[in-house]
Image (spheres, rainbow, N blue to C red):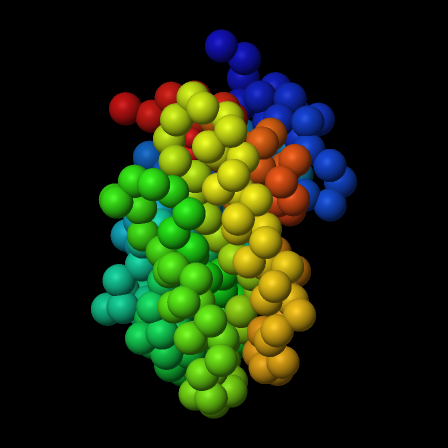
Length: 222
Ligand SMILES: *Cc1c(COP(=O)(O)O)cnc(C)c1O
C-alpha cells in the first residue's frame, strides 16, 4: 500500500477546492495522524469521545477536531473545550447540552444536524419533520453558544449507486430548503457533510462540500 502521505495527496487531488476533507483517524495511532499533519493537513475526525480527548491532549493544538460519531449528552463536557465541529447532533436536548457546555467554556460551538437518509435502521439522525421542528422552535434563539452551520448524513451501505445518489440528493434538497427558511441568528449555513471512502464521489456530485474519509487515507481498520 502507498504511504498515508501519498494516499492523502491522491484523495485531495480528486476534491474540488471548496470541499473540506476531514481525515477520519479513528482507531489509528498518533503517528499516522502526524504523518498527515506534517503535510499540512489540519482537519481530523474521530467518533469516540475518549479517543478524541486522548488524541487532542497529545497532538498539536492547531488541529481542527471533528466529532463525527454519535454523541451522548453526558460526554459533551469532555470535548466542549476544544472541539471544532460536532457533526452528529440529532436531538434538541443534545443541542441544549452543547450550548450549556459551550457557555461554560466561553465559546460558540459549531454543529451540524444529522439527518437520517439511509434505509438502514441503525443509522442515527433526524427525519424531516424533526429537523423543521428544531429550526422553527423559538427556544433555538435562546441558545447563544451554538451555531448550526449545516447538515450531515450517511447513505445506505450498498453497491447500488442510484440508491446512494437519491439519498444524497434528498439531503442536499433539505439543505437548500433550510437556507431559505431559517432566519435564526444562530443558524449560519456553510456546510453539507456527506461522503465517505466508498461513496464520496457520488456525494460531491450531489453537492457535498465536506467529506469524511478514513480507510482510503489510513488503510483498513481492524
Ligand atoms: C468511520 C466514519 C467515516 C469514514 O469511513 P471510511 O469508510 O473509512 O472512509 C465517515 N463518517 C463517519 C460518521 C464515520 O463513523
